[in-house]
Length: 105
Image (tube, rainbow, N blue to C red; front, top):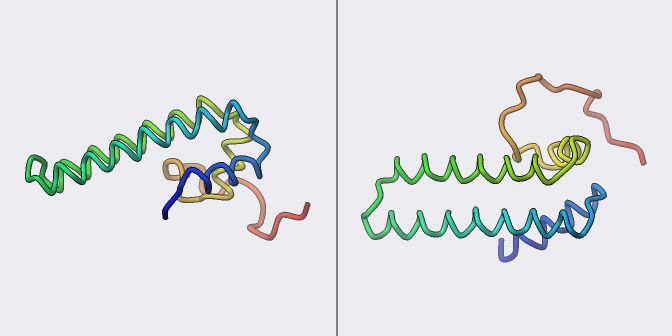
């Protein structure tokens, strides 16, 4: 995906996140993406094993998720998880609300 920033901006705008929050999220996203690219380079250079890179990537994702939870309100974060189930940690509450039907506006 050439520009994840644009996709995130669209997602966040859809759930009513304001411009300042979007900027903060994009900053956190940039840190994660840069970190991931770093890891890839280190694996290619042989300075990092795939296992180590995998663990480090998990930490980067957790940091990004933590940043999201700090920047967004609980409602916004929940709405984001509804749009992007792959975001955030595993849902411990086992499909909290709704019947999974389309959300009527």
